[in-house]
Image 1 (cartoon, rainbow, N blue to C red):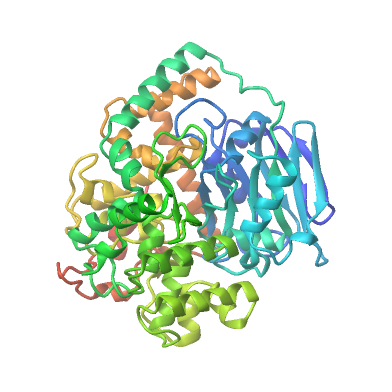
Image 2 (image 1 turned 90 degrees about the horizontal axis):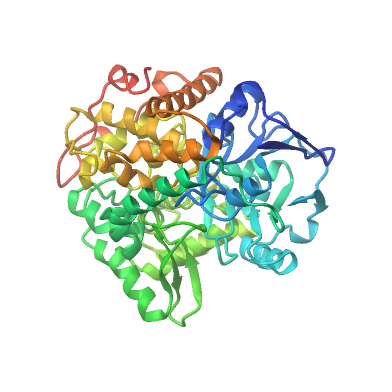
Length: 574
């Protein structure tokens, strides 16, 4: 797989073959290694010295189920450390079929003009994109699909990325050409905006199928892989039926559903924003309950949520978004939450960071708690480039600093997601210690703490949760390198041959002889690279902590966060 390097200042490009330590890497393994090796850790994230790397996983472009995730990596404008964010969509598989293992955006233009990149089988074009500046991702993607053809892979920033706001996302078109899939966390949309790249178009027309070293062995392994994904009660039943919002009632019942900026762990109005409520509205309004985020997705936890008139309001309406815009802010109207989701997708904003920021705005008196209509009007300020929008779009920590608020749930400046760490301590350890800043996907301790997947470890107690987070962080890094959806982890954890099946697919595709130990070694190497970058950027063990607000007892379980600095440092000590 070749590397396509694009100089955004000179507007030229070159292909090169990965060599040395980059050879054989994909997804997060490749993005993190390139950022460590090529980006000065102390550089400003919006400077010409930062780079933005897009990389498909090692299984991208193959028939492997749920293997179409795309990784993006850079130094984060939000955290100041290394960042990898990934999403489903069409781009990863198309890049793989074009023989491209990474696209790297380098340098920085001096003028105000924007460009777009069009990659085809036999050409790369860097074109003016000034006509799209100031427009939201819905309009831009619709226009580009009309111009370049449906099923074209698209990456795009909205007005938030153009303003280089710290919560800016990069939106990836879903299979309907809508901005339903986000490379959301860490402000990578701001990095793309700093490079003055509005959109990237990937067209794999006439490209050959990916070469396979052992087709029969791959076919057999993938058959087993699909079987375990479909037979698992979470990936085969719960997620397809209700999407990720199936977790609303589950986590609320466990007392770990953060309410009113993490003051309580259970919300009496959770049913109003639950997966069951979302599914009820979708069915009544003619939406789509079960949809894949990319071709070959067998879990199909995405959806299309329509408004009361039956028109598409938002897509990929997920648990984290519903929580951040809902229980965290006390907004009960699910349609208001859906509109907030749509606006974030259109402007190109991370919904978790923006939802938490709205809650901090309520803490500071900019809005009343639960004011959904007011939140919508405030969020619209991002699209107008008004100062209120710039403040909100810069993340929860910035809003808190601006308003003089000390109760801000962030680690490394990144907002905590939808699981209270005092009740789900396994994911709390991950929040504190992952190099990415507070990120549930880096080591999803909810598995054993609440869902009973891969064993049972009490989320209310310290015992076993450092080890749980460590194992999950290693495994997740390897899954990200393969380009696999995080939700395959449910099946992997509950099947003795889960890891081996992934190894079998990799071996069959590339003609290798990898073992399960190699997968563990890969995961550790990725995390070590990320830790090394953050160390060079000035991070210390004191950054691997939760804010002091979590020393408070959380009703109704009345638990506190009780891990010491040194206990947490054991998590990634390998």
